[in-house]
Amino acid sequence: MTTNSGMSSHCCLWITLILLSASVATAHNLDDVDIPKLRMSRPEFLRDPARTVQASVAKDFMTFFYNQTLDHFNYRPESYTAFNQRYVVNSKYWGGSDSSAPIFAFLGAEAPIDGDIASVGFLTDNAAKFRALLVYIEHRFYGESIPYGMTLDKAIGDADTRGYFSSAQALADYAEILIYLKQELKAKHSPIIVFGGSYGGMLASWFRLKYPHVALGALASSAPILYFDDIVPQDAYFSVVAKGFLESSSSCHQTIRRSWKEIDRVASEPHGLTKLSKTFKTCSPLQSSSELKKYLKFLYQSAAQYNDPSTQPLKLMCDAINGASPGISLLRKIFAGLVAISGNLTCYVNSPASGTFAQTLLGWSWQTCSEMVIPIGITRNTMFPPKPFNLNSFSNACKSKFGVAPRPHWVTTYFGGHDIKLILQRFASNIIFSNGLQDPFSSGGVLKNISSTVVAIYTTKGSHTLDILGAKESDPDWLVEQR
Image 1 (cartoon, one colour):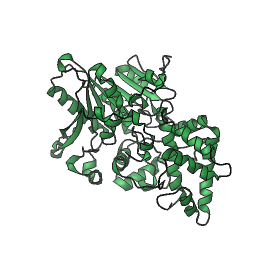
Image 2: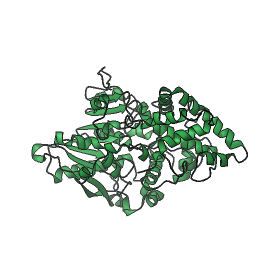
Image 3: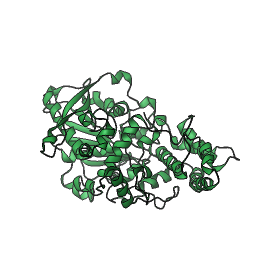
Image 4: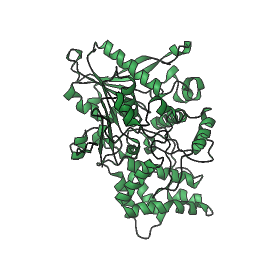
């Protein structure tokens, strides 16, 4: 584990969790643009069952619904409309209000809260030690917390309703629920610590800054709060992906690099897309070579971002690519890598989205088209063809889909980000930013201590939100120390 003071330290389809870049210069439809997404749960085929919260623990959780205010910031009649917001409580370990035992609150992000309860073992692993009450709050418009009892499709399709879908409203939701719980439990002196991973990690850090009277501290895991408004270079994310493959295997890295032109070459031949569809066993015939390249890019991102020590998907993929028969074609090698981490499936590439992935895809597309404009692109990269982020293109696609243009400067206006050390030194405290440098998102994270109480902890070999997953006896020493 490492801090800047020199201390030694440090469900779904797989695409549900990947951050993508937005950049097609001529796109006027979101289907043609890669939409940035953030989620912390591992792709199903990369999950380590040993890190899942066991059923014996899960039975200790109780589900509640809070009568939540629709609009916290206006006083129009419709602002007072209420909706049911789900939160889940585990009181098994709590020392009680008389002992001033803490409340650990996990802030849900762009998915139903169920997945977080199953995967975030860090809270249950530490609850007994601190005698903490555990609370998990679902983000508005996800899971069972959608206003007016709508489906997400209908809520997003209604311009008046989706206007209440924002990070500021979500933070106010969390504050209202937590204040209510302390009152109900007569826990006036129980300090609240908020936790979150990925987008949820950003929310946790912002919550501490915006609601210091509610939360005493925050742990923000893999929170790329600096990947806004050109604070970091747009190609930082993909540079980390390429670096990971290069360090794992230079020959694998080069094979992937050469494959992009080969895909286009085959696609340009008579019946070329049919050939590619057969080579990659697609679930439906490919409509373009970009469809295949987009899928493969997602897959490489996934392997790099979730390169956990227990599963090592990046090594698994490269071993398969390098270990293919000598006479096999370049694209067959790529397919071998695909199968190695995806498993033996009936088909690949373009299977339809469903379940929680479909909800995340739809909800996050609105969030990125409104305020969460994360300008990730590919400029000069050693493994991927260029695809720079183009704000005009992205704006056109958002206006075509939702009738509104994104506000790329709003996050830094409302939450800050520029000159973060100077600003946070003035007033912030009790925030831990935790990252793993193998995670491409770490390129937009806080990696240096800001003050003695706003600290950065990172591990060289860590991956996306690995630190807040459940602990295992086989965890390496560097991960144990980070936790």
